[in-house]
Length: 363
Image 1 (cartoon, helix red, strand yellow):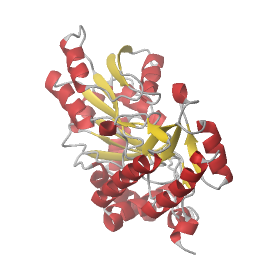
Image 2 (image 1 turned 180 degrees about the horizontal axis):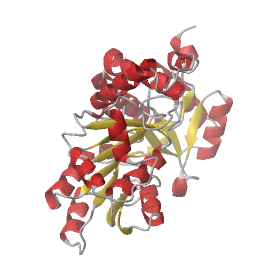
Image 3 (image 1 turned 90 degrees about the horizontal axis):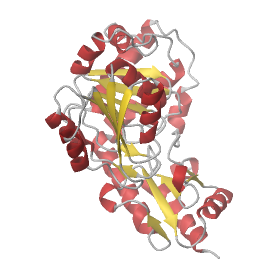
Image 4 (image 1 turned 120 degrees about the vertical axis):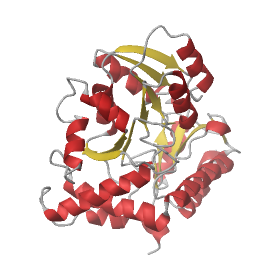
C-alpha cells in the first residue's frame, strides 16, 4: 500500500493527520517518567526543541492543551497590565483569559481576515497612558487563515518598550512556518503539538527567554502546575516537573528527529508554502480566499465558495472520504477551512483538491 493510500484524507486545521510510524510510538511499553530510559528521551526532546524554536534559551514540554499555556504565560509574566492584539477567534482567547485572571487589559483589535498592523501597534504605544507588562501576539490565526508578521510586530514592541514581554501563540505556525525565537526577540512562545508538529493532541511545547525568567522570579503568585521556575529547575535535571504523557513524549521524540534530521526545517517550511500556494491556485475558479495573499497562512486557508454553500461542500467531501474544516466563529456559515499542515504530502493535497474541484463545481 502506498503512502498516499495510508495517509491524509483529513484536512482540518488541527488535529492533523499523524503518520503511522508516529502512532506506533504510542504503543511502546510504558516506562517510569523518572527512569533513566525516559530521562534520555526527555533530554533529547529539550535539545531538539531549541532547534525547532531556533533558540539557545529555555525550552520545555507540558502535558496540556495550548490554551493552558496561554493562561500560564499571563500568570507567570504579567503582574498587572497586558495589551492583547486580536484578528480572529483564537487571538481573542488571549483576551478572555486575561480578563478572567483579573488583569488590566487593553485591546488592539484588527478586523477578521486582516493581519495585525505593525503601524497601528506603534501608534497605540505612542498614545498609550499605561506601561504594559506584556503584549500578546497570535502568529497564525487559525480561524481566518492569517499569518501575522511576527518579526515586525515583536520589533515594534522592542523599539517602543524594552521591558515589555512579547508573548506568542504559535499553535498553528510552529513546524509549518519559521519561528525564530532569539532573532525576533520573543519572550514566551508556545505551540500545541497536534498541528504543525503533527502529533495527537495532549502536549504543548514552549520556549521562554532569560529575561522572562527574571520577570517570573520576581512574581510571587504563579500557580503550581505551570510555574515556569519549576519547569526550569526540573529541566536542569533533564526531567519533567510532574508526571507527563509518557507515550506522547515517545511520539514527540520520534517526530522531532524526523522534522529536524530527515525532512529538515527548511524543507518543511518550503513544503507548507507549496501546499498553501497550491490550495489558493486550485480553488480560485470556484472560491475566494478571505485573506490577502500577502498575509495568507501557510498552514490553513479560509475559503468562501462562490459556487455552492460552504456546508454543502464540506458535507459532500466527507461522503467522498475527505474531511475538511468548517468555518469558524463569525465566518461559520460563509466559509470552510482547508488544513494543509504537518506531514501532509503535496501528492495527498493534489488528490484532495482534484475531488474538491468536482464537488465544488457540481450542481
